[in-house]
Length: 369
Ligand SMILES: Nc1ncnc2c1ncn2[C@@H]1O[C@H](COP(=O)(O)OP(=O)(O)OP(=O)(O)O)[C@@H](O)[C@H]1O
Image (cartoon, rainbow, N blue to C red; front, side, top):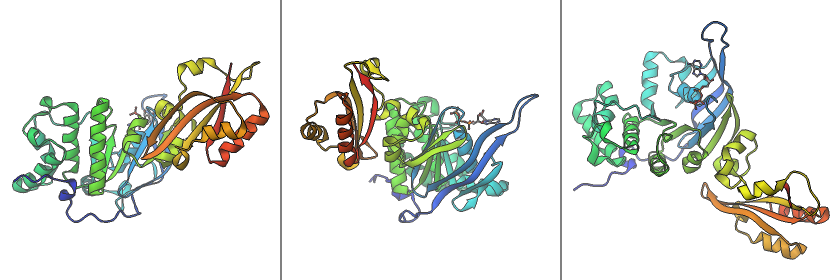
């Protein structure tokens, strides 16, 4: 009988409780690339990076093109060496390793890529088997290891197919199975869903979540899409011009972003972006007869309270709802509402006091005529 394979069947022992220790630690890491060609300046790709990825967690790093994401991730498996500082992975300082040490760390660190990097002349099975063949594992053992992995990524019936016969999502599933073949502790994901459509992206992110949950694998992923972070990560670090400018729990960063880069990434993601009709009517300064436009953010426990009706009743205020949305981020409710109220400083002050007493964030975003 064919028993369904769960990721937990693949680990050598029963899963341990998640340790608080960091699986990956960057300690004051900088990386400068030498100037190429006459007159060219050197490139400082990373500056003073301090970042810990807790064991068993999923941490997403987001940044614009050229921000330093790939350099950061390539330091983890020793594809790049830091110019200064330390990178410690699973207790080993990677920067000081010789070739043999690097081979060992690369068995403990799997990686998946935007363009899958499969060998076109090998079937799905043989692609997953490759790192084990290189490690000199006997054929029978390779089979015992690879088949459950292909089952786990949902490709049991595609094991003899070549990459050209697979969809993008299926190719990435082969890539994930191959990355897990050496039973790594850490998985690096380099824009692994950037070439996939939104639905396939969701299914790959779900697969990564279940692997993280059931195998306790630590995942460090880099992306330029907030929706990917939101779909899978527990923590997010925002990188800008080679520096980490913000880092924290996904819910906190999404609902209270501090850095302008984070805010610009969030854009439409959390209902922060105003609808075009509202943008067209919004003025930075009051004009005669204009009302104040106030943004209210509903986080966590107060996200579903009937605050607007209470505010209107208690302060005798006429409020107009201009736009709004209620959503869920990292499993917790989060709402954004833009209301207008009469441009009366005393009333506005009372309304802000009322809302702040309920721990709601408020922001006057302009005036609407
Ligand atoms: N081998 C290299 N030699 C010289 N400069 C490099 C090298 N690799 C990266 N850089 C430079 O370092 C900076 C960071 O590059 P990196 O590839 O890490 O950014 P990124 O955030 O991954 O960008 P993208 O999203 O476009 O891949 C860029 O200015 C890039 O041109």
